[in-house]
Image (cartoon, rainbow, N blue to C red; front, side, top):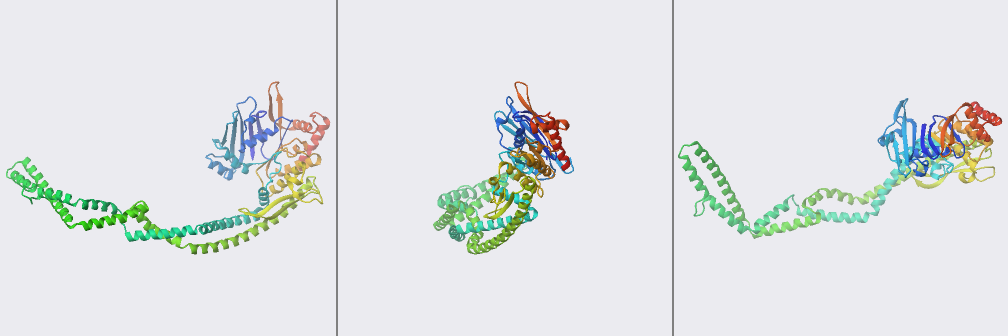
Length: 563
């Protein structure tokens, strides 16, 4: 529910505060005073496209602020929190939501939700949960077949909602299985080629049986074998120098002789040095032994081993070329088997998916039939209820029908829904937008909204002069029905008819003033004699006419009698 709106420098409105609140609020005013600016401002708060032309002449920007009363933990509050903002709790499970929008004269705009900046798209997301607007250029929001189907579903209540939810689940399951089966069937040849290639690759890897790091080890081994003579000479020379196998004095003997010389005397410093020489001697002996082992390994190697190493390296190089790295080939050996089993199971999977799809299609047929039956039953009730409502709106011979016919399949069902109107006996029912005049269309729209709101209320309705083209008794009935609609929803009507405004619990007027240089408009709340004068002006153009004032009081008494 809209609690309050504030407009500044929007169109001809310099600055205005609209205390709206619950029930039925009527907004009137002289032609050109800017009544429709109220609807324009509301549209901005609901995420409509900003236009710098809406900024009042001479102003740098226009601003619109609104305060809504919403459930503290409802869908609106959840969406606000998703946007990083929040609502203000006011008790009783209710909260205030602050929304703002500004437009600069250069065309730049900003939006805020819950006191924090937000994209205009967030406002548009909230719009469907907050307000339904009926403007002069959009008198019937049920223009499209999808919108008419959604309206019928709203009216259908729990029976239609349950059937639609069951159908949607069945449809999504059928689509998922059908999509998987179609992809599997269309890719069958490619998957067969993949299986054959994978089988060959796995066989090659299994035959080679590579080990992680083996290629690096073989590279080092091959380099050693290729330089065996040079390596043998270097190792043998070093070994002889350390172990004394040659004619020259060896390092080990020289170190032993030096250590014995130091041990013959007794001096702490020389004793420490003698210990260090002993440690060096042990290390020299270890190195000499390692060199002996290295030479023995070289002696056991031969040209045949180098050939074997190179052959093994060639096998591993082939795996590296095919898979990028040796580790990647080893990993494929570990994971490829499960993928191959999946590919080899294609025929069985196709058979299983075909059976599953057929079963899903059968469930889908059943749920579609249940949904169609629920919609057809709701369509009869909706047509009868709206027809009865039209009689009260001075259309006694009109008949509204809601046709449910087979249509294309979608997530919303297999039904096309069309709202048809026969405006008088003998007339063939036609699409409501073509079967009614402008004034009739206003009443049909209102009748539909009143009936649907009885089972599925919308928080707020805004009507922008949808009473155009009617008057007299029909206008009185429109006002009466707006008051009735306000019993379950907040109703705001921009109107030029006293017969409609008379039924409002809250009457606001847009007042135009001119100081000779600038024209501005303001909004005032009317009560008592001020309201009677405005009603008289709407009736006759003369706010002080005794006859018009009498008629105004008579109209205002209708609201009291109705209440």
